[in-house]
Length: 275
Image (cartoon, rainbow, N blue to C red; front, side, top):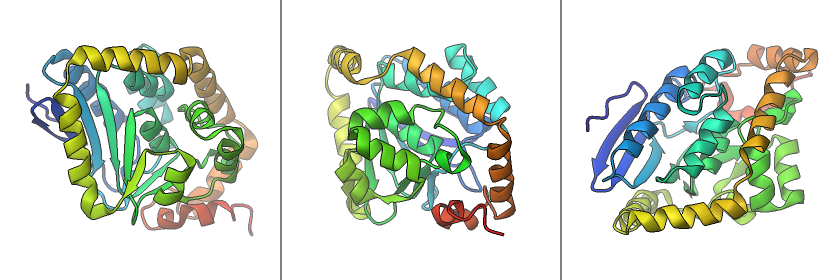
């Protein structure tokens, strides 16, 4: 099977498919990347020889920055091609429920829907030196629409989930590991080899075991489709609120969705109402 995409560089090694995210200028989750993710998942699921998906970034500063807020309708349209519903929350949940084992190998920033994609993966491992995590939505008066509330409350517990979701603050990889946001933080020099070895080990085992284990763990730990749908709808509704729009305009004026400004995005979000 040939894997050719606009925003993903994909290679197969045995039962493992490695997908490197390359969506310049800063790996925004826009319609092109969503389209390619949908196609990748569909093609990988159709190939019984493939068992594991590993996602990493070709941009050392950004894994997935967040959604492209100027193209929400377009990326939702692409997500619907997999799930039948215009929602990246349901796209991400589909990945969590897939027979494929998904692993995120994280270097750089994962904020907003970038974090939600990582949470949807079955496992995530991050570079201690460079990975940064943040749920930015509360700075705009919004609930995360891609499943963050569902995942983080289960992973961290109520108090830590509320801290993360309400603060819109950056968390480094070591603290993310302590909180349960990710599996492990590792030195960048060891990260790739560790993830590749784990993926190949998992891929060497019978697919039936993957399916059975994921099904039972998901029955305990993965929220129902209806809860993801509700969060997605609330996010869409809040995008029309005047205060949300005002704060988004203020962020855009300060460089939101530009590469350099978002290196210090958490600081910017704390000053959106400054004159």
